Amino acid sequence: MLNVLSFDVANKSLAVALIRFDTKKYERIEHALGEFRAIKTSGVTGAVLLRAFVDMLDRILHIYDNAIDIKYVAVKDLIPGKKLSDTDILARTAALNEYLIQLDTAVAPFVDPAEELKVLIEYQMGPNEKSRAVSSQLLYHYTNVLFVAGRPVDGNIILVGPSLKNTIYIGADDASYVNFLNNRRTNYAANKAHSRFNLVRLFGIVGKSDMLRDIAKKNYDDLGDAVMMAVAWVVKWQGL
Image (tube, rainbow, N blue to C red):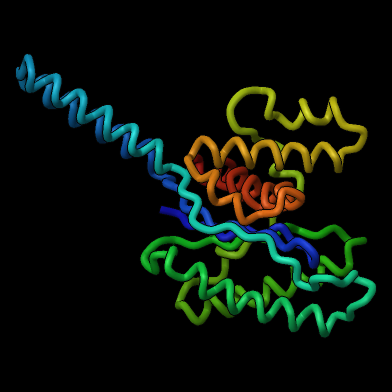
């Protein structure tokens, strides 16, 4: 199992998602099929064979249902009631530090120390100075978290380009990035609409829509960025 802690970086809407992926699902499915084939070729028939077939289907459905297990989501305003221009980097750093301490405590029960953990941080483009500072501070914080936990840092903290999440979609073509790009005036608007739509669809498919109740609808696109970045990265690099 692979645990992914994914961050969409911002000061006013820092979004985070912890998702557990079954990157071995195809191997598990093949194993279930293999066991059924063995039973079938053994010569059993009737009710025994039917029971084995139903058991195989149940196992495969369980594997698919748990391939993407969303454990924790949140969107945090680090400077509530204030504009970025009303704060300095010291105040924002203190707020981020306090929140990350709380976040580490909140997500710890969901991560098995024996399982793999990746921290994905959205790469911030050059002009975005204030968000770039948050990205650097996240890098520093989780380098220390992994070190203290005895986990290797190299390869477990990844900066992810902002366009990767646009390469995938959930379900039918109506969720594809191209569909939103054709119906929005700007790439930014298409990006946000794509993330928001796919967030809602994915949570509905995996039965976790209730987790969105505590997320303001204005922040669905921020959380969608964090979630879709995690899914896109796992699909590209882990073969989900």
